[in-house]
Length: 294
Image 1 (cartoon, rainbow, N blue to C red):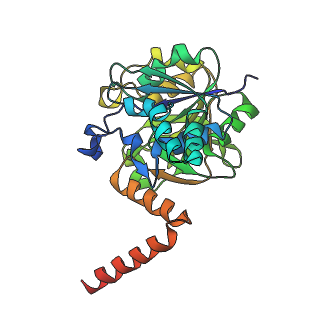
Image 2 (cartoon, rainbow, N blue to C red):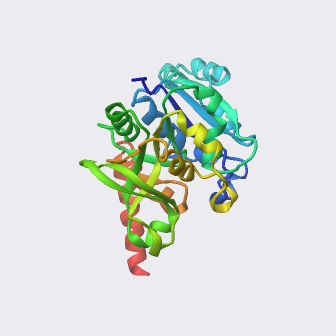
């Protein structure tokens, strides 16, 4: 069975929910303390055995390319200051994986972004990680969990989580028969269904491992919700040809694509960091006291 060596990370979106900040800064480059969101996602992929990262970008996302490249001028400044450790940290970022970039000329949805990467992926299985979802699980990275399911069954795997029924219209929803604890044989996929029509409360999150057959399925998939090529619709078409599995991903998921999710992520990461935790807790306690006083 082919090894999952490549990951596609779509990052071409405008990030309109964070305007005006994202007018000039990609939302994926917004920091969680001192590392951008995209850094954590790449780390998850690399820690899962991924060797090549394929970014599907837009013309306004050059900062992502620069971040994962060498920065000789900065290294010279740091070297003069004797900051060899900082230089090594910067080099480690660039050396995490092989980074490849391709532009999505039109923003026509996640399915279109994945299809844009077809030539770079080739005829092999690959992972997809969305650029605004951070999954914390140091012992067992989220995408690694799906890769292991792929190696077990040899078919596409969708990452899922349970959500309240009132939230199903925000997600792609899957329904299926459980074959192993937490792993289902997918029987139905629906993109953002109305609450009363949702076949389950098992929501698709931003992690997938896909066979290359997805590309032909996407080419035959009509535009769906919002006039976009939806990956969920492409997977529904693929399911007519081959079985697909879903896996409940273990770990703490942060959806940094919205303001509250981003703030929650900052809070979580700050409380975990030894270098800022104590002072940060003091600040939080003081703010809570101020709120209580009105």
